Image 1 (cartoon, one colour):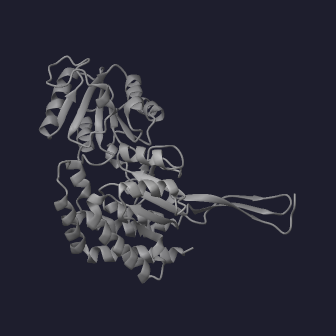
Image 2: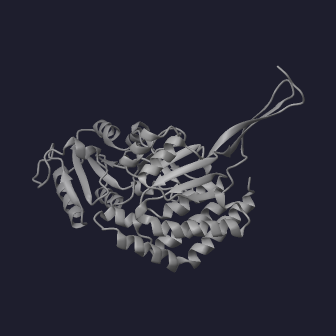
Image 3: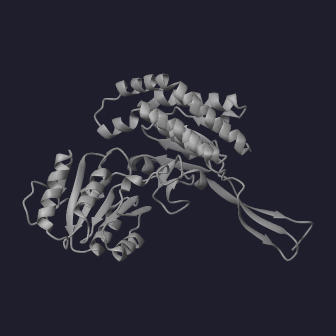
Length: 395
């Protein structure tokens, strides 16, 4: 197992290589962008590797290097009456496979988190980012080789769908963990064809509830920020507004107009909406389940916070939810009862991100409850093992 110093040296070397090769990375990315038909704006945004994104990749490596090594930490110690010393400590998962779509920065960030935690990782990126991912994988190998570390810690797979299906079914590499990072079809594909333990980095479809005591300007600012990027899983899609909000009709009209002026397609559920609005009436149930990844947003008036919690738990992806209110007790109840990985009071869902939550680079954001929930970074990519030290004791 590599020492912390070796791992950190590799990550720092990789950061330097990324910055040195910025032009080559962007050139490769331009080939991918040119090959993509551009029909899906959110896909294009995820695919594009701008200078800002390239720098973010390098920064992610440095942030990960600066983090505490998660391996070998004692979780529990016990001195047995017979003299044995019992220690439960953290160990790497082992071999991780991640299958992801369009985002070349995952090639850097996912591998950085896995490597720092002592794991070997196999990266299966989408064909739409092939040129960009290829050069990034080459930089990984340069950094590993330059520090005398086995290049087998980071492996890039160029497989079609049929070969990927065979890989996850037969599991020739004996993967300990698989992470499908993408849309619901990808996740369903992995679940159908693989018996490997899965961490689901699921859909967003995030909800916001506006309480009766909410400040209008704060609510508008948080909602608009939630749609500041449409291609990310922490974007906001549904807004539920308490019927008890003072001057409700005026605020609804102002809110709808402000969001439309910001370039959003406002879908207003007319149930309980007294004023006129050229929108779906009512919003179909399929839309409530949908993660938009677009400029659409739904507004709905609800009778109570309890109804808001019920709708959030029924339709959201279990990713993020927020409440805007000045009522501290109401906020506490909402945050305890909403079944999402991250819940916020008077803050944007856009903060559900490993870096924003002080965790550095992330490999995924888990919407399940086993093995981890929310952003999965270095500290979550470990398992544990019981180490028992004796002197001939028998039972």
